[in-house]
Image (cartoon, rainbow, N blue to C red; front, side, top):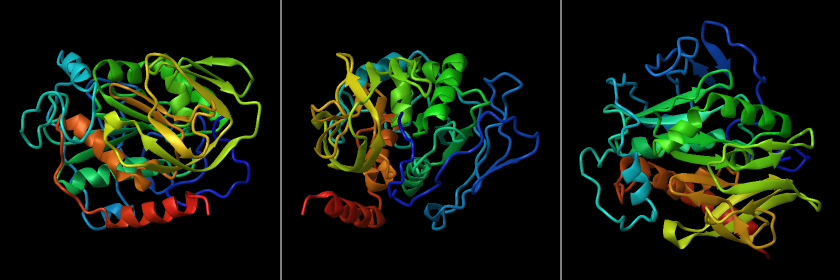
Amino acid sequence: MSDQYYGQQQPQFGEQGQGGYGQQPPQQQQQYGDQQYGQYEHQHQQPQHQQYGQQQYGSPYEQQQPPQHQQPQQPQYGDPQQQHRQQQHQQYGGDAPQQPAPQQQFGRSSRMSESSLRVVWVYPDLLSTYGDRGNALVVERRARQRGLGVQRIDVRSDQSVPTSGDIYLIGGGEDRPQRLAAERLRNDGGLVRAAENGAIIFSVCAGFQILGHEFINDLGEREPGLGLLDVWTVRGEGARCVGDVLADVNPQLNLPQLTGFENHQGVTHLGEGVSPLATVQVGRGNGTGDGTEGAWRDTVFGTYLHGPVMARNPAVADLLIKLALDVNALPPADTTWYDELRAERIAAARPA
């Protein structure tokens, strides 16, 4: 219902299409496109789920600044300070959080490893359509531009989701993979526990629907979501929501106008427990006719925008990094490439 491909021309960025569904990986390294997944032993996971992968980066983002792989030094995650994180981030903005964070290595949160920012890319074998993997690449690149170490953990759908990450990213997917992903995330429980610990979660399209209370699956049935956002999704009766989107972001988030690409049949309704992420100026957004696009609550975000959205809107990636570090600003970083892409896509989306 979310990301079925209907022959529309899609933005060319990152990986296209889906991987295998639920296949057991061999004991040695597993290939996924241009990614190579090795072994990473996670101290909190059960023995049968200990391979998450130190990444070998071959993207154009990393050619200028090769990644520095570092072993985490037994970080202590999920501490009681998560309640403080949830209270502090009622208003996000780039200018003034309610209380300044301690300035130690850009004010690292107590959740973080001493060696790196942990970015978890959830279920790339099920939820990674329309180049949404690019969001993980952009978060990595924007952090490294500030001299931060980054450890990306790509978690297959047959592996446990670690609860100790700092930023979790979830992409879009077609209807059957979406149902499988929702079922496995419910049974696993790791993403919910991470949210309870105050982790930052950013989801796109099918991933957005999964974070809600329920959606309509490929069998035409109501499929339970994770309940991390107070939203629910039904199947739209009219034309699909397809095309470029321009949307003005909720002023509390202090972000520039969003540009992205939508392709979904779902109509997502917002409850009282969330705020719209943005208001569309061009496009359909949540499909409800009220102009809303996406949703957010505390450190959990959802949107229908592909593109990928963070390549078109690097300020979104910067926002997630600031939340993970508990700071209100980051050192400046070059945005020339992103600015050119933004200008091109915004001009293309505006009516003639």
